[in-house]
Length: 140
Ligand code: ATP
Ligand code: MG
Image (cartoon, rainbow, N blue to C red; front, side, top):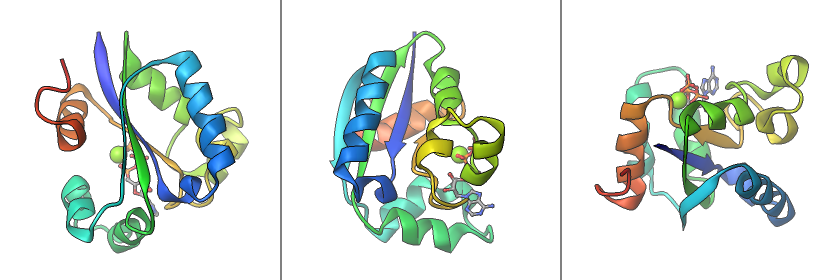
């Protein structure tokens, strides 16, 4: 079975009721094997998102991800990497509200940056990202 890293980003944590709703839906669909709330320092956000260093949205992304606490979840199950990405929807909430209104980003996301969720994009990313939050043994 696979594991993946799901993040509930700071915009959503501003509303505890929405967090509850989302976490309930996640628990109905997936096994949550780890959970942690963190408040990132700038350097931690830059490290996590190092692949995006130099992009136009990078500073906005780092500012957003350090604007408040976030929740990290390790989800485990068959095909969970792609299953979680399907539930989340693609990056841009306004586009998802047209194409896939049932997805979490369509329902909760605010803007292309403040899109409320993250999901690992591959087995290799999941391994790195789970280790980042939960330690090097967290992915098996
Ligand atoms: P992918 O599946 O391609 O990894 P993603 O949703 O994780 O999609 P990334 O391209 O990895 O998006 O970008 C990471 C984050 O940076 C996004 O989730 C979003 O918060 C922000 N972001 C990405 N692209 C833009 C953009 N064009 N404008 C503003 N913010 C963006
Ligand atoms: Mg990504």
